Amino acid sequence: MENLNFPVVDMEKLNGEERNANMEKIKDACENWGFFELVNHGIPVEMLDTVERMTKKHYSKCMEQKFRETVASKGLESAESEMNDVDWESTFFLRHRPVSNISEIPDLDDEYRKVMKEFAGEIEKLAEQLLDLLCENLGLEKGYLKKVFHRTNGPTFGTKVSSYPPCPKPDLIKGLRAHTDGGGIILVYQDDKVSGLQLLKDGQWVDVPPMKHSIVVNLGDQLEVITNGKYKSVKHRVIARKDGNRMSITSYYNPGSDAVIYPAPELVEKCPAYPKFMFDDYMKLYVGLKFQEKEPRFEAMKAIEKSSVNMGPIATA
Image (cartoon, rainbow, N blue to C red; front, side, top):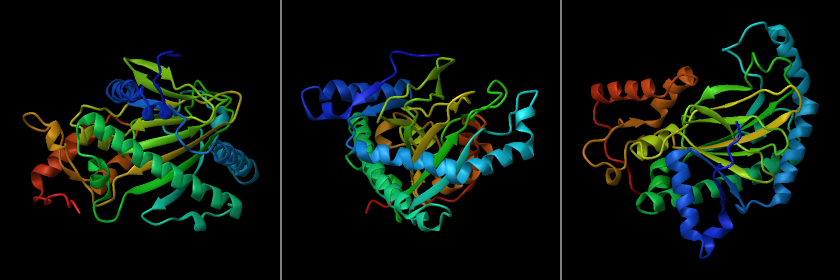
């Protein structure tokens, strides 16, 4: 379903007299959508065009045949009932922080590696800028979210490069099954011609509109916890299409593995609605439960919190 009110934020307008109106738009998007789309975000359009061109070239040269073989081996094209344990996507994952693995990924040519490294640097800067905008809207000290995410070794930051090829049975197989993201803040550079990303709002699946050179932002489970539920992570999915190969480059700016996550004291009126836990412990649980509801994950962390020793205060340095 299309929604003409999908929040789109022009970041250039944060520098002028329309700043307050656009900060309000970000606030409303975080409280009521869990998603928004950025234009004029400062990442050079030439870089975005190069990333898209090289990603699509890499898929056709190095990934397409492998994907077809996987589809054939699993018999996906002859599926006759809905498949709930598989996604119609071809992916590889680049880790940037704490330690990059870009040089180790096979089949990437040197120019593509260089471009993706530069792209990751731009996305990281944008993610940190967004975290400070969220702090401002929440009434938190500037840098609070970044400090929580960084802890001792800096954030966990990586990029999933996905292709969603034409699917003969899109009614039976999802491109990517419905889930909330387990991490922090997520930035997506998506295909501007082939749609497919949808979020759940008020019980309806709503299309995230493809827009040229935009960056889609969504909030992960950790920001729901830190904001004590003021902001919510929202369920989303990718619909497979019969025609068109959709590209999606999703960067996850997450807390470091030893980051201690809990509701910011300034956002708690009486008692926190969410538990305190180590990010790494949450993600170990998330891996097996990604496509299930998030509430039992929070409950499981509450149980662990009750039975564990005090983890100590967050390092502020």
